Length: 260
Image (tube, rainbow, N blue to C red; front, side):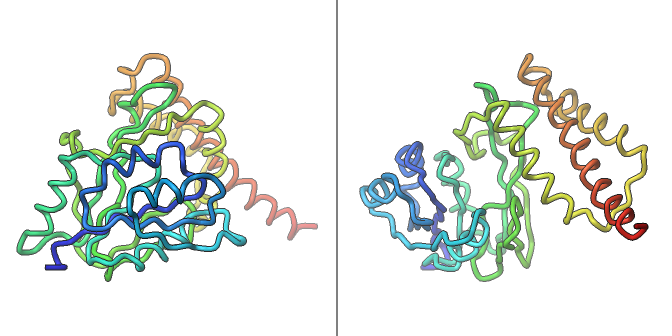
């Protein structure tokens, strides 16, 4: 029955580095769909070796993957979709869990799955569980064309408990300091529009960075990751400072413009 079949969707652009390892972990799903944005490396050759179905989303003017994500999930052949990045591994336990889930009488329409991330050469406690809405019914889901956004699922959404670490997606990418700083700059640009209706006072510059540091370093156990854990928690605080500063800068520039 198609109602109990799952399509794995992987968006790619020059993703040869980890792709073969990723495909090994998803080859037992009913379909693996590669949505490629005109790669120029061996991405498609690797995908063909694993008998993936391949569709193309023209890269054109797009610098983000989200428009291709929405296209890809609606190209999937089966009702249930698992979205996997080209540098993420799916454990056998998660594979079995998802198939057991869709056989329930009333399965949730979407599942948030925890993810294990690396930073400076190690998996980070302070970065876990990093829940991502990656599994859902295709026909009740859209993926907005906004950078670093989650899909919108109409229906009931559940979360896989973080204590079930064997079910977590394994993120292979080993984020460096410079990569983290680049992401902070990029993602805070998105935050400006997302939080444009909020009015943060001066106090936010103190309590938001401090709260974020405590959550990452103490509550989520970042202290167990040694110096890299401390650095990551501090960068999480910096994220808040930069986000608030950019929001202030935009509002102040608009006000100054009216006064001239």
